[in-house]
Length: 264
Image (cartoon, rainbow, N blue to C red; front, side, top):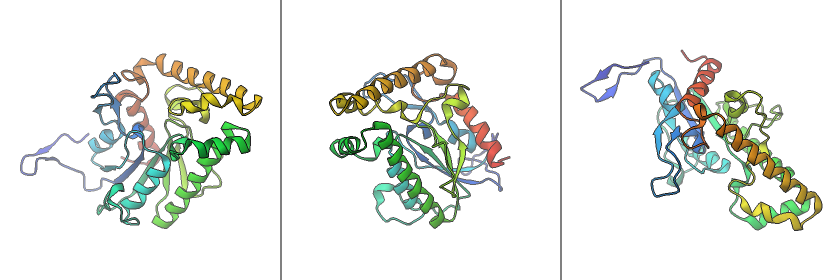
């Protein structure tokens, strides 16, 4: 780890061979959060997690992630980082050379604020899960094409949402960690749809569509309850806020990233 301090520049001395790493995604990019108290100071980052560990190793880390970010917002932030979009809302271009891109995925229903549009899709498909998978597949395709345009593969981590099991259609998306829950708690086996009821409570009211949807909602409630139990039963990895890996959880993520990317 880099400990040397340069008093002239007020900065940690960096290795000349450190890599440029760009991270995009939701709150799982941010690190360890304090205990969630629903107050004005809620969701305060107390350790920068993966970013911090990589910076401590002397790498140049640009974290364009943010709490609550959707996959499509990650797409636009990535595009802006490489000067392919001129809206400052998504950040200015990064002048530093980038060697690796890491995308920590989130759930697909965040990609629209139009609940009615999602409801119409669910009515057409007669399935909540099918719509979630379809929307996620679309974003993978968009990220895959953007990766080709940039000329750098995107290394993917399944954070709040596990990665799709079949990544073959996306030749420029490299599975780095298919599911962080599974990495930290082997055998947890959380499905992609486990988070459907976390932010999107309107889903609970769709039982009127069909008996099939009603049964699916019951299964989604069970999935969400199970995911909470996984985190609550492992305070060493998810305390203090229970919804994000803490600094130890992030260290395990870092160890895997370091090994798979061949970072020294």
